[in-house]
Image (tube, rainbow, N blue to C red; front, side, top):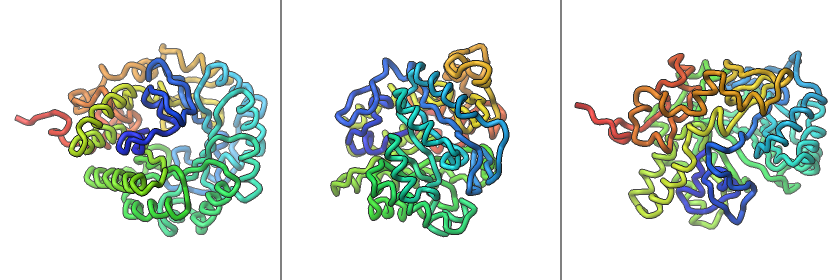
Length: 398
């Protein structure tokens, strides 16, 4: 994650200690010794079943029963292990996590074990009663996915009316004081909605938004042609920077982040350097501490799927490190006998092509390895979503 509010606008937010290694007044996490030593934020697919059919779904979910999912007892055993391993957060995802009948029991149990719990949901099932339950069991944050304004969102979500129901979910959470935010995946089809989404964030009083770069996984693997062009990516990030700065200048406290493309960090730095070189130097130190992709998949982010299989991140469903029914997550996560896991934990020497030659390797870290894997079959190949020019990354052509 690249925290636009903090890095570009200089306003601290609650997640900064774990991202950039310094304490803040809004702190929710302890400062880890280094980014490489962070325990992973763990994304658990609580169920694969979903009431929608999103075209970019990494788990390729549908509205049907799936066999072999973790039982309540097994899920609690997993939670115990995650708590003992001191992961900073458990993100309950899916499919659609609110379809799982024991989800509130498990969220409350996780909270009792000291875990910060998060729901990642499409929001369409959050009526007033569900919003109250989410608040009552102590869920720290609810991320609701919205992938465009009404027409675009409903097409992406595969269900007419999904936009309005998701908006009801936002409003119901805000009404009961539940911390909630918007999740938006950028594609060519919703790129033109970006300005309208920022308007929506303001008019609806949504305090946080994460803008995701498309990852080619699950049904999203069929959308490679629908990813933003490099020029569109640059323009999208420029809009995000400008609108976030505008919010802050007008006194609107909004936490705005970009996700799944660590090149956003160097690009933000280059833009900031043009207007505030001193602040830009400070930001570069934060980015270098974070390390970008070098400390993400396989290090600072993990995935456990509904059947208990462990993956380097939620998009890497094609590669399994083991199953928690056979070995604990904490044991699997620290086992570097697996060649991919060993590489992910020390990936910089393995990078190839533009990523190997890039002058921003220490703060971008080769960005998102699964995207390189999906395009080239090689996890160490250049990330195809890098939108910086050869000149910007320090490569000169003879």
